[in-house]
Length: 261
Image (cartoon, rainbow, N blue to C red):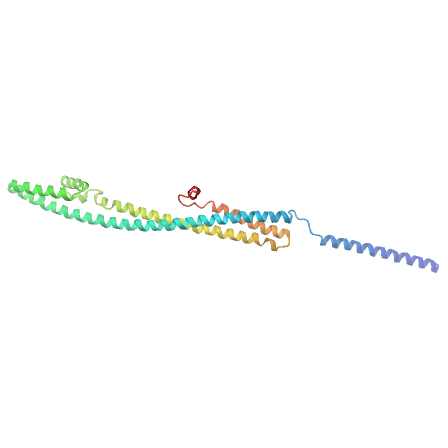
């Protein structure tokens, strides 16, 4: 092979190598550009920001609602506790009055019993004037000191050779009104305790909504769209769960939006 042919082959080889290197560089640059290019997301940034704004508004409204209803429960709690205290005080007063009335009727019955005994002695002696006089005293005592119920109980006692207080349910009748007041006070106390529980539960819902607002507020600090969307979805799930939970909590007693307009 001549020197000229060898030189030509060498030049061709160099050209081929340069072309191969050039092609390799182009492929590497294209691959680099493709890797550097942002990956297309299934949701655009503009749509995500719009959804975040919408759910921020919804959560803010729900937070205000839960706070308001919780405060109404707190107001009902204070009212019911006050009513319960007043009812308990009234019940104690009524109980004391009933006890005094019971003691007074006991004294009246003792007096009637003594006069009845004297009347029987007078009848045994045949002293009719004394009998009539004692009978008038007994009638006067019953007329001046006995209620209609007590008077009927006395008649029952004479018929059954017993005391009026042996009649079934009669002694308890003195305290029936006071007992009803005690039960009313207890019912108001339980209602106040339930209002307190419901108010605390609404406060818990408010805390969850605050967490949702926090999550939706920090979405913007993430540069990657999928990461933003993941935080957004977590916030929305918490909001929906808190809303469902909130609707299981009873509303305040007697609540009506019409009362505020």
